[in-house]
Figure (cartoon, one colour):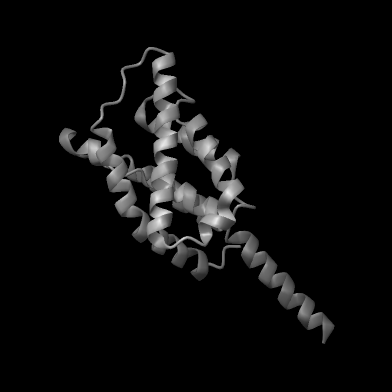
Length: 173
């Protein structure tokens, strides 16, 4: 009767609450991918998997992942890259804010349109970071960094599929 239904609902809500770890584990794995050693010539084409994973979770679960998570991911990226702390965060936070305002619309886009939207957000984030670099007299990033953005966009569709499968498998809500 009612007691059995309540117990089943309680178990289900506990499982969902515990499945939030999937979000942070996937972001952590994406950040760890930044540590993979690559030859110097290949570093310019390294895709920004951590940012794409962040954008996926903002689109999928805007009530769970937001601007504070973007700030944390940005600080972690700065720590990994050895950049001044806070250099990546403002761009990620601004792009996340735009995603939060438009997530319902972007969810309706097909994969090509979503990929192009991710490119726009990556360019916005990189632009804010470059603006901050100029403000503190750091050397400007080269134009070859655009190759990394192209590689990132090529990774969006498979990354989205993997994260979507993980979200559904672990019932992350």
